[in-house]
Image 1 (cartoon, rainbow, N blue to C red):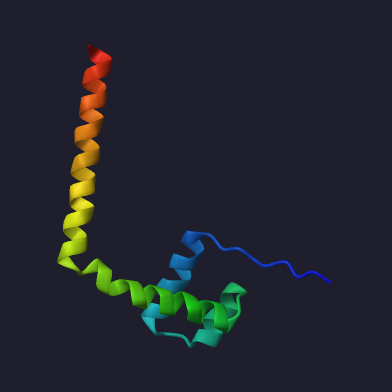
Image 2: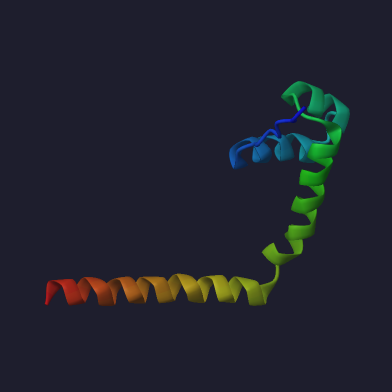
Amino acid sequence: MTTIRKTYTTEFKVKVMREILREEKSLSQIASEYGTHVNVISRWRDQALSGLPALFDDRQARIRQQKKWNGRKNEKDYMQKLAD
């Protein structure tokens, strides 16, 4: 017998995470409400919490900003080449 693993969209995970962060309901209540297992949303919560420090790391922010600027510069260069 094969089991089919459910996949959830990013939007769905974010919706569930917002519920968790509100701390108005228990994880089991949230899991029941959204039709998932407590272990699944616990894993999502742990992943989200482990990624939080990167949001506030200045070095990571500078790298993201630099990539954004480089992308704009490359896009401008490309558009200029098309115009020539």
